[in-house]
Image 1 (cartoon, each protein chain N blue to C red):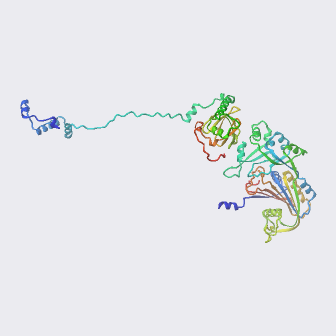
Image 2: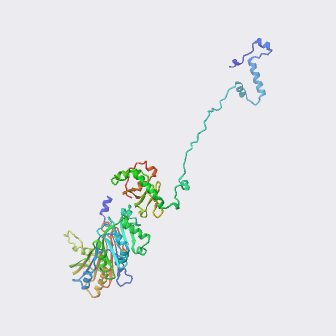
Image 3: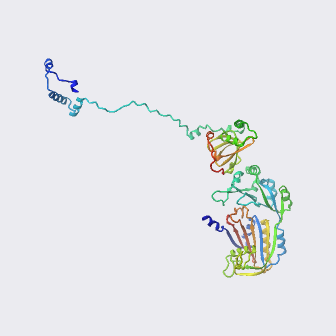
Amino acid sequence: MKAVIYHAFSHKEAKEHDVQELGTQRAEAFVRAFLKRSIPHLSQQDCESHLQRKAVVLEYFTRQKPKQQKKKSRGLSAKQRRDMRLFDINPEQQRYSLFLPLHELWKQYIRDLCHGLKPDTQPQMIQAKLLKADLHGAIISVTKSKCPSYVGVTGILLQETKHVFKIITQEDRLKVIPKLNCVFTIEIDGFISYIYGSKFQLRSSERSAKKFKVKGTIDL
Amino acid sequence: MATLRRLREAPRHLMVCEKSNFGHEKSRHKHLVETHYHNYRVSFLVPECGMLSKELKNLVMEIGPYYSVKNLPLHELVTHEFIHTFVKKGSFSALTYNTSIDEDNTAALLPNGKLILSLNKDTYEETGLQGHPSRYSGRKTMKFIVSIDLVDLSANLDSKKYERVSWSFKEKNPLKFDFLLAWHHTGAEESTMMSYFSKYQIQEHQPKVSLSTVRELQCPVLQSSSLAGEPEEACSALELFDWLGAVFCHADLDNQPYNFISTYRCPQPSTVVAQACLCTVTGFILPEKINVLLEQLCHYFDEPKLAPWLTLSVQGFADSPVSWRENEHGFQKGGEHLYNFVIFSNQDYWLQMAVGANDDCPP
């Protein structure tokens, strides 16, 4: 390598340029001594490595893209939802007469769903449709319950959550009835259906997609 | 194995024996007789007596009729008119007929104005009236007791309680039963009962009376002061109870080795009595009449008689929902609840009260 960059002067070149030619050995020794005297704090080793011009590899950097923070929409917790009071009904609006049109709408909806409720329609078909139908606005009543004070509560269904029905009775009272261990009755145009609340513990939105299996007893 | 052992065990029964004197001011005999509401059979045994006295015979014959109705709906028992006419004047007793206490729904109206319903689980859940589970149900409650105070209800007819009870009996779950009715009234309104329930095929019945004389009966010797009996001188109350049962069954009391039916022996010491009078009245008998009978039997010893003692036994209905006062009664293997008076010539008495398995201890 050195030979590529440096080569010694020939005799003739040396005489021309008036340069005293030193032998290689003597030149090296001279350079070394000179370095040592001028840079005293560097050790012998370091001088040598400087002279040799070694490149030292420190670290390997690749160009990194900034990590994308996935924005997950966590939604609100139940407490926050309750505080927002989206689903509460004001006491001024809790009047039974206000919800009767809703009941009429619901009856219409069910009639459309079953393609017209004639007296000779099959009860099985109506049951199957009712399983997936939305029940908001139906007049629902409790026929059987493990707790005797719930029995007989009748009214229009305002809200259905996972475990509970919210009903407004004719005396304008909002009643919250848990679904578990209760049997509800829905009556539409002469067809009476019983809903076993213990098997119905689903949000109304999920119920339309769920396949119901026969499991356990219907005994309360 | 455990089931077999359990089936072979005799069901648990309780007997309470007490002794007292009729003249004693704290004697409970009247109260206990009055609070045992549904009485099926009354029998008394008088040793050394060939024929009953005329007063006793008249009393027994006129113990009063009882009535039966068919398909009486429960809401009839809750109407204001009914409560006012019958319950408030005198003591009205009703009991459902032909229902088993541990299988079906049973209803009973007690003379103090309480309507007790003993309902199955499904009926209770449909009726919607507040009640409590029965004490003899085990882990899965199958029976519920609902108690409605009619006198309290009639005090204010507009109360929510009354409306709820009427709604439940009329619309929600109309229950109908065949009833046995009896009314002890202080006026002379005999016919109102028949006319009031004329829609329900009301029938009047007289209690069945059977008189018989038993000859050569072995009677145990008793001493009124010791319930437990002296070893060689008198028999205990328990032995007397067993002996009385054997007499009522007309069993042989000799312990003959070849007797297949009974090997019972009369407890010693015993005497042989030439004749004894046995009288049985069967029907739906009011406790007031039993009180009167008891009084008359006490007066039997006013004149000196040969008999040292006499007995009066009363048995209750096996299917009644209550035994004494409002203690719950169940059937299990033999729904007995009965009491027995042994009356001595010096106005002392022994009282034995026995109940079966699904019962509370008698008071």
